[in-house]
Image 1 (cartoon, one colour):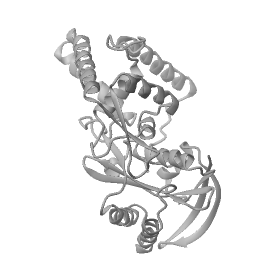
Image 2 (image 1 turned 30 degrees about the vertical axis):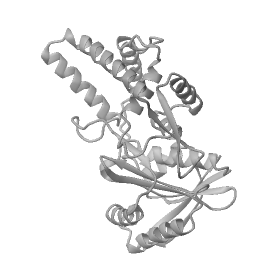
Image 3 (image 1 turned 135 degrees about the horizontal axis):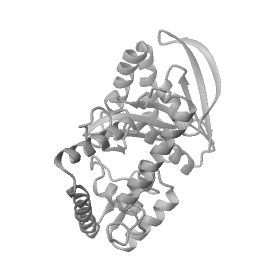
Image 4 (image 1 turned 120 degrees about the vertical axis):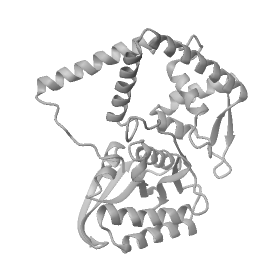
Length: 327
């Protein structure tokens, strides 16, 4: 349910090729200019990726629940094996502590130690100095133009939703708390009525799914995630057991105000990670052909449509689709 993007042609093939070359040229210039090509960043023993991992741990959104390695890997789009090596180095250096989750002893939350926070503070100060030096040679007008251009790039490429003054996205995925299941039912009913014209029978279906999940929960093989942003629930997804080898993704939702932050993609990625860890061989889902944003997320995650059927439900004429992902 990420923000819809318009497919606006860039012109003819030669114009598109010129644009691609320009973007690549800028990438080469900027990565060299900010020192991203150096083996060690900010005169530290750490690579650029390692420093970014430190940054995420130091600024983990919400602070209501520390991240797991799987959540962190999904947020940064990193290979879990590569991230594991970075985290092992942090732990050996006394920068990181791990703690097993009470709800699932196989998973561990991650948090910086006091030493880790001091190390990050030194890196943060060094980064401030380097960026300050980068801007020092610019006039006030040039500095303003540069920052506005960066904000424009971020907004167009979806890094920052809304207007150019919006803060960087900061959200977390957590287990459900009291009242969250009622919120899931309410927001599905309200949003699908508003955006797709579904009637209250859809809300009733969501209530049945949520109630069945709570009443029959198998914690080792089923999970619900709530996305939290700025202290409020803004998204959900469920992973439920369908058979010994097949799991089902259900009730994916992202609030309109939080779309474009990557929450939908992150929710889907976490269900896939958990399904694999739980030993399922296939992940399936049921959706409708008019839910374009969700279908885009599924396709991007590797799901393939394996069936479709016309039906009349929720006061609408719909085309139901079944999608599957082999794990």
